Image (cartoon, rainbow, N blue to C red; front, side):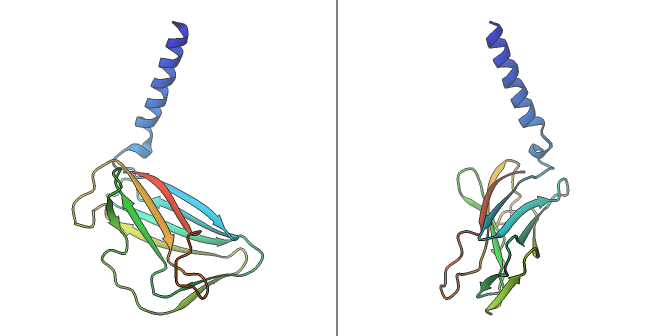
Length: 163
């Protein structure tokens, strides 16, 4: 009986922590992730709790000892996709944007960082308001490998976003 009471108390504490966590409030979106690939650290975080919108902050930092170079074929440096629990895409940052067709290179010296932001008004691609809940986020750099035209799968992060 005592063992069951302890297990029940632990469950209540876990559920309380989950549902009372400020990150689970509809007015307090939270989420973020990071990855390091070839000495280049990519961090994605969110801000804007309680504002009716959300800002994604994407930061690249060269943690290596030599210059890191990323090459791009358009003016788009990154993209973000938000999906519902069923895996359906709800919002894509690039959905309503046009980008220049131009080759460019981002060079980061050792210790140097580069930051980008993307605003989301918490509306789906179809203009409807996104409902509170849990969403999957995938953010990635749209660079390509030198002399090969496909995206670098190493500069991609996925995380859970609670709105």
